[in-house]
Amino acid sequence: MEIKSLDGFSDTKIVSVWNEAYEDYAVPVRMTAESFFKRMKMLKIDNVCSFIAVDNDKPVGICLHGISLETKTAWCGGMAILPEHRGKGIAKELMQSSFLALRKHNINTVYLEVLADNTTAYALYRNLGYQMITPLYYLSGKLVEEGESSLTLEQVVDNPFFEDEKTPWQAKEAHLANYEQLILKNQNVVIGHLIVQKANEGIIIRQFQLSKELDDYLLTQFLISARKYFGEVELKWNDFYLAPELLEQKSFNLNITQYHLKKEL
Figure 1 (cartoon, rainbow, N blue to C red):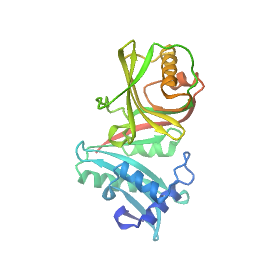
Figure 2 (cartoon, rainbow, N blue to C red):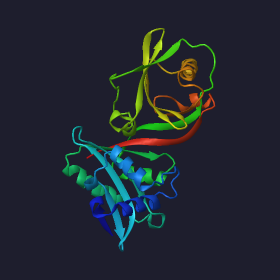
Figure 3 (tube, rainbow, N blue to C red):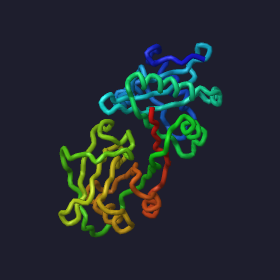
Figure 4 (cartoon, one colour):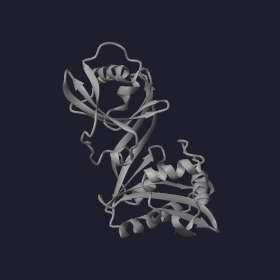
């Protein structure tokens, strides 16, 4: 078994091993070369800190990491092994090679997300020293709430981001494109901040922060104001600030749960 950095592979080989390794993943992530390298650029994936495992000249696993030299942090942009090669310790070798490369870049902390029901991967990451930060919930539903609301949404520009360690790296400003910043007001008093992205199927909430606890009444008021602002569209809510059962009571579906993890190097 050999572990080699991405620099030693053609674009075709890299995309091929990605698609093969993720072919049975719970969430569809098969990509074209164009979409793969667009994602690589957006996530600031570093070829020197990203690796492919090779067995008898065949790529059998891939591990991608992006880095920020300014914040001395890194994030895992994907780690997967071809189905027939799992259970052989390849994932551990890929991660350990990444850690060595990240340390050479003076990276102090590395983050990743793992599906909550992927117990094998979660056990591996905990064994490698990753610690839980928070669960992440991915829900979707239709904006259909009607009625009167004292809340209003307004677009803002260059508003400070209220990001902290709990904010998933994929939802941070540095990794978002074509986003919209909104403030939530209650009778002209700002009570919340949102970061949203428009998608073909509707709206995705990337960040949602309130100055007060979100309960059923406040959620209903927000959904009414959101329908007035966005229209009756599909809403995807990717966040950790709320209990998912609140949205499930509003006929939203909990699609997946992930664990947001970090490791100090």
